[in-house]
Structure formats: structure tokens, C-alpha cells
Length: 350
Ligand SMILES: Cc1cc2ncn([C@H]3O[C@H](COP(=O)(O)O)[C@@H](O)[C@H]3O)c2cc1C
Ligand SMILES: O=C(O)c1cccnc1
Image 1: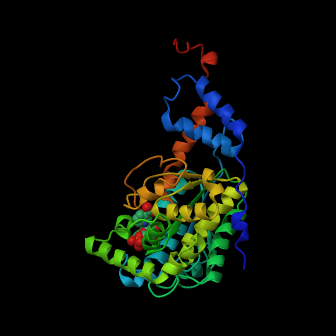
Image 2: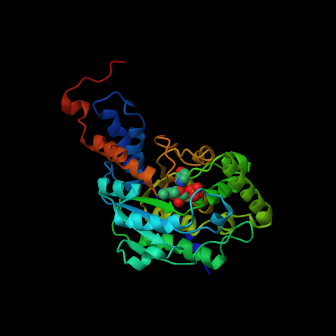
Image 3: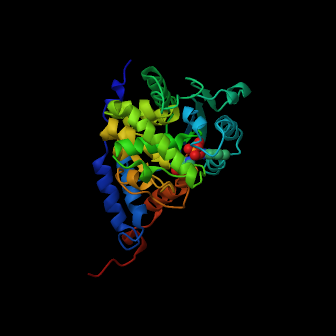
């Protein structure tokens, strides 16, 4: 069993393209800095894509779905069956992420790691990477075995490897109960008290949030001796879909594909990925600020803060998909605006 590939360095950043892009921004017909974070974004994308004027054409959205043993303990307000039902909804075009993928002309695929029902319907954008019906309840045992962890991480790697040319990769997730895993991972890796990183998820009330915090605290007491490295944290507390996201993020960075990270669950996966392989962090662009209270702690671990805060708490990669037009505008402005010289506009006097 080998996790060695996870440690290979990320693709290098092209610093001369980045420098050229920064110089170009200074010449465009606007006061320098007036386009705020859009300028930094265009410059960052130039370094990642290795060209002065980056473009975003081929966008791949890949969702990972799996069920959680924790769901039987009242940590989510929704029944476990919703995971599989939503996979059908993704594939048939009715979910929020399906609408956004269509709107932005992005390719949408779903890998099922632990839900079987939709596979029987023969949907052609659903990939079968079945590992087990669900992870184990992690107050009783590690959520998954080491072998299952490897299968899940490798499924994420394959999702990236099997794509053709890609300018931007968005990972998303579906798994009733997965904000419990995300909160547990964040509590351990960032050494935060559980009460500060746990939240309503899909809509728990106050007593539900307390129950969820107690569930996590019990699990952390059980696994404490094992929680010494990011892979073991993922194995004990993760979901299959979170592990797949870890594999996908690391692989995308190694292949030189820019990643747009979604909300709380995806950023918890990104945190694990960055702890395994810190060289990938340049490639992970954080899209939006999740409404989950634990998100703030994770946000500080990224190279740059989230691009916007719309109070989203959906997951599915939806917040990342909403950032696509922003990134496209950043690239288009960077490429198409006239320079002061071209437009005959006078520059700053002092
Ligand atoms: C209909 C429906 C659609 C969703 N799409 C994403 N999630 C989100 O909710 C789940 C996490 O919340 P919790 O940990 O509280 O279960 C994940 O599946 C997540 O992506 C959904 C949840 C529901 C109910
Ligand atoms: O931010 C998220 O990813 C999120 C928050 C709540 C429920 N589902 C997802």
C-alpha cells in the first residue's frame, strides 16, 4: 500500500509570467489597485498558468459522494438516504451545482464512493468507485481502514488524471453527516476546541449542534493516540468523499491545474491535503467564506482569504462555481483592457 505519490512536489509556479502580469496591471487604464482583488487574482492565475494573460475555458467540476456511519447518531437533520437521492439529482440536472455547471459551461461528473442506488440507473456522468456502503461510526472505530483510505484517495487522483486539458478544477461533495467529519478534522489539525468549529451543517438546531459536538468529543477521546499525522486523522475521522477530495487536490496541484476550493467540507479536505504536502498551497484558491462557524479558522491556512461571503452553507462545490464568473472577469479585464499608451490616457502626475 503506498501513499508516496502524495508527497511529490506541486507543479512549479512561473514567476516571470507573474511578474509580466503584475507589470501589465500597472499599465491598464485604471488607477493601479482600483480593481482590488481581481488584479491579484489575474496575477496569481498568470503564475499558475505560466502565461502573462491567463484564460479559463475548460472547467471541470467533480463531485464525490459517500455515506457516513455517524449519520445514525443524529448529527445531521436529514436522513442518510438524501446522499444517494442527491446524486441522482446532480446527474439529472436539478441540483444547485447542476444549474451552475450548465450556466458556466463546466463539465460535471460525480464519483460515488459509498452510495449505490444511482448507479443502477446507468447515468453516464456518474462514476462507480464503490468502497463500502458507508464509513464506520467514528465514535466506535476509525471511520475507514487504511486500505479504504487508499481507495478513496486514489479515486480522487483518478478523477483528475482522467480529465483532458483543464484550466480550472472544482471539487465538490455530498454526504449526509460530512460537516461532522469536517469539524472533527479541523478541531484536531488546528487544535481548536470542538465547540468553536462545530455548526448547524444542513440545519441542526441548538440542541442538535450540542449533540454533534458531544459526538466529536467522544470520537477525539477514542482516537487521540492515533491522531498524530494528517493521513491518520483522515482515516479516523474522515469520509470517503473527503479523502477523495484530498487525492484530487494534491493531484491537480502536481499536474499544474488551478483548484477552486468550495466551503467548509472542501476546505477541511484542502487543509488535510496541505498538511500532507505543503507545496500544493499555491494552487488552492479559496472561493467563498462558508457560514459554518469553524470556517474562519481554516480560512487563515490558505495563501489568500476567500473571495466573497454570501452566507452560503450548501456545499456540492456550489460556492466555488459561483466564483467562476469572477475569475473569468479578472482574466478578461487583464487581457482586454487598453493600456494608458494604447488609449492615449494620461498617467498619474505624482
Ligand atoms: C437536500 C440537501 C442537499 C445538499 N447538498 C449539499 N448538502 C450538504 O449537506 C451535507 C452536510 O450537512 P450535514 O453534515 O448537516 O449532513 C452534505 O452532504 C453537504 O454537501 C445538502 C444537504 C441536503 C439536505
Ligand atoms: O460550507 C459547506 O461546505 C457546507 C456547510 C453546511 C452544509 N453543507 C456544506
